[in-house]
Length: 431
Image 1 (cartoon, rainbow, N blue to C red):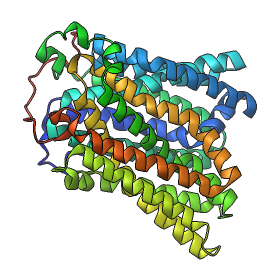
Image 2: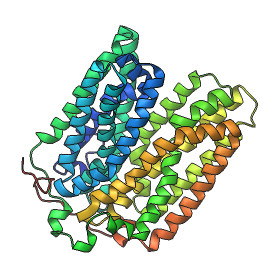
Image 3: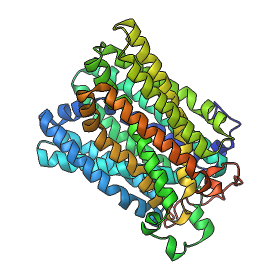
Image 4: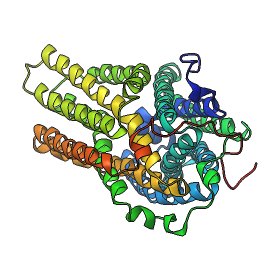
């Protein structure tokens, strides 16, 4: 990836390329099973679809509960150690999947993986924030998104190839390969040697009033940002959750169109992330985020309008157009959202701040399937109207926060991007 944009200084920082390699390896393995999660677990364990669905739901709740603990661990031991731990937890879980033969065992293994999944996000976001600062941080978040999307896309292709070549035995192979990919990702970070020191080491111990989750509860601007982000992350569930039901069940489109839409979305996310980030480079992060939300809202309007088009080619064209607008919203949301949250958090408790911020994704994963399905069942336009309304409110909230969040968080160019000294990224470990 460095060869794509060799002039980018963020990739020449110690640990930057190694980190992106770890994320790519992780995503490559995860892409093998994510499109077929429930089918994958059913085939590997031999349990009924009902048991698998219930087990995954229970495990998701366990993962959500682990999110705040992950934030505390990041602040205590540093993001690198926690990130490696999340990789090893998930590697163990996937290695155990083929041995699962009962419902209790499924819950234990699935919960292990869910805890690793939910803990990964605050750790990874904190690690990204430690590697780069100011405008470089936005660029690195864009590279992170690109590396993961490339990995997920290639993983999906490999998954399809494995199943077509070796049939149902491919599910067992996928479990093993995914476990190996997590070990490989952990190895990239563990054996890379000392790289950076975090801002916590830079600034010393935090004052008592800035420690713990109480600091976040009293930080009203940040809580408002979290509230706005909840609307954005909920809309991120449209493509994997709402679109299959809306396109195939409500509109009667052929299932094959979903593959076209997902491929289009994935390719554009990969090739468009860096150009979009360049266009956002000199904008306020709040304004860039609000514009992304406005584009998301426009995509909801286009999806709703597709229902009024003649069936057949017109509706298929409308779905493609709506997905293009939706993808533009995704591209515009990713980097400024993550960078704004990271820069708004005091360095000493950034892990906790980002754990709360990332909690919005876990809430969306739990709410979207049942909420979207219910709204589409009652009246399909109702889903798009409600999502559009939530997005408009979220955009207004973000714009209002422009003068309330720290200036260095809102203006990426206001802080000088300084090269961090070589040292361990973790504050409490040396090995």
